[in-house]
Image 1 (cartoon, rainbow, N blue to C red):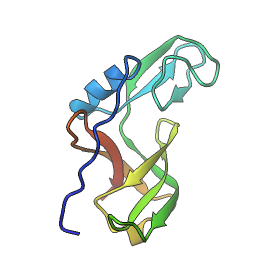
Image 2: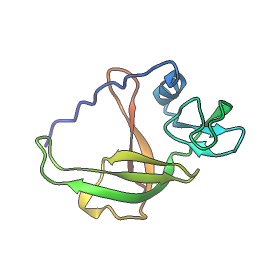
Image 3: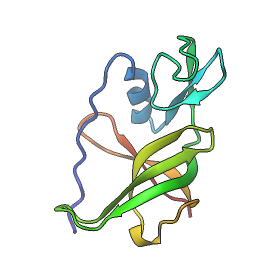
Image 4: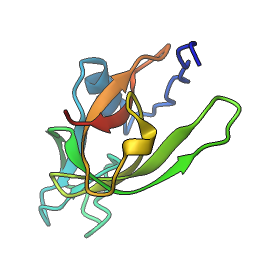
Length: 130
C-alpha cells in the first residue's frame, strides 16, 4: 500500500487532557500513585492498585519490550500487528506496531514509542528499536 494511513483524532476528556497536550509536544506521560508508588497506564485520576486519588504525571522514556503480539494478515487496509508492550517503568499497554517489518517482530524485542499525526493530538504507537 502506498497511501499513508489516516488516523482518527483521539477523543479526550478533562481527565486525560494533560496527556494529549503532552503528546502534541512529543512526550509520553504515564501516571504514578503517590500513595502506593505504582505506575499505571492508561492515565486516570484514581490509582487502579490502591484506589487513591493521589496520582502524579510522569514522563515515560517510551521504551519497553514486546510481551505478546498478533499479526493480522488479512485486512481491507493491509496487514497490521497489535500487541502488548511492557514499558521499562512497569505498566503494560495494548498498542499497534508500525514502521517495521511485521514478520520480524518477536516477543521480548525492544520497542519505542512513535507519534502519528491526526487532526487532533497525535496517537502513540510502537516500533522496534534499532
